[in-house]
Amino acid sequence: MTQPSALVVDLDGTLIGGDLLFESLLEHLKKAPWRLLMVMGWFWRGRAYAKTRLAESAELSIAALPYNQAVLALIRSRKASGQRVLLATGSALGLAQQVADHLDLFDGVIATTASENLIGKVKLAAIEERLAGDSYTYVGNHRSDRVLWAAAAEAITVNPRATANGIQLLVDEDARRVSWWEALRPRHWVKNALLILPLLLAHQYADPGALFTVVLGILAFSLLASSAYLVNDLVDLEVDRQHPLKRYRAVAAGILGVPQALFLAGGCVAFGYGIGFSIPAPFLGWLTLYLLATLAYSLFAKRLLMVDVIVLAGLYVVRLLAGGAAAGVAVSFWLLLFSMFFFLSLALLKRFAEVRNGSTQGRAYDQGDDFVLGQLGVASATGAVLVLGLYVNSDAVRTLYEYPNIIWLLCPLLTFWLGRLWLLGSRGELDEDPVLFATVDVSTWLVLLAAAVLLLMAR
Image (cartoon, rainbow, N blue to C red; front, side, top):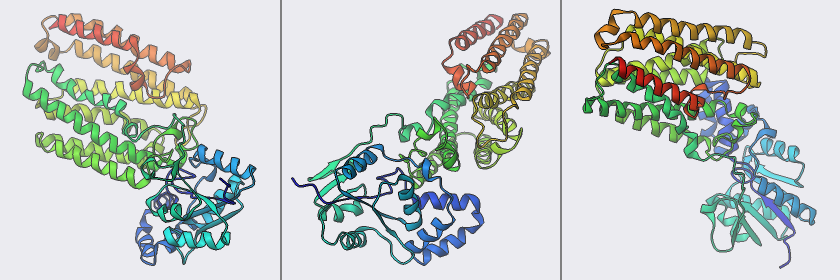
């Protein structure tokens, strides 16, 4: 078979993951959300006009876009064999030209202008006019590309769902990119197991009704947490793409587009509240506070010095209060005070590890802040141990435990665990999230087992 004289490559969803229209819209509204009505007016004048105006205001990092390595390899191979290579896209001409200039692989660009939206038959006519009847290979991904595949001498897709007779499938086999499921961060759901703690400490774990309600509460919190992670990934899209590891997340890698991420986040909120309405009313209040606090953290609080760690610690306290509301048990002053110091130490440790690892982009901390963060974190850890010791000596313990003196042994256990985490963080051996690190740390599980044994003996 004679090789076609030209290779025509689509941009959105083909050469790159994601869609530049929605990404430029996201960036525009992040900078100036009050301009939403203006943007709606642009779309009222036509999709082509809106694409062009958004492209003019977009400040996207072209070099950091998630390029499909298989498509790039095909372009380089065909260009080396003498094929003419064109970029033909429905994205705005300004952004398409920036991509072409960055890659320096294309012999020409055909893209949307303020008066013409280059998709489907319009794109086909523009390609045929540019090539003046020469045969071509077309690489695309969307159902609107069917008319182009039908007209092309060779048809290639990067979308497995768009394969059909005569269309070759080109796959980017970058295994480091995560799936949409991993974008929900199911590993982080373990943090919501904290809701069960008030029930356990109140010694009402034998009540199956309360236990079932708390489990529902954990599920509701997990769904809302996932929605917040998706919003966080959208807000941090440009920053994540420049991070050595976060650029492989589903949103940053373009596996999950902006509309899909928003739809998935909305679905998580809807299902989370659907579950929450089956739990006593006070729980809904804490669930709503958690959602608002996580959104505030994602949108602006995480970029505020010290406010970010206080919000992170507060989110754990909200989980405890929600667990108490779901189980119908009061959360003691002692537990709340201990939790604030304890989780503030872990939040500070998270920032400490980020500073040590050089992952401060998008945060309010600089290299060198690790000294102060370490001092504050160790002081908070010491405060947590002190509160635990005072609790053991209080009258509240004697109403719950027959042998309260045994609980004193929790203090050295807690000192060992927190001290070890801080030492690992100081050595650079700690993951940026200490809670997730703890879930796979053998020493942590041994400490938990020892603590459970001590509490049972004291009972």
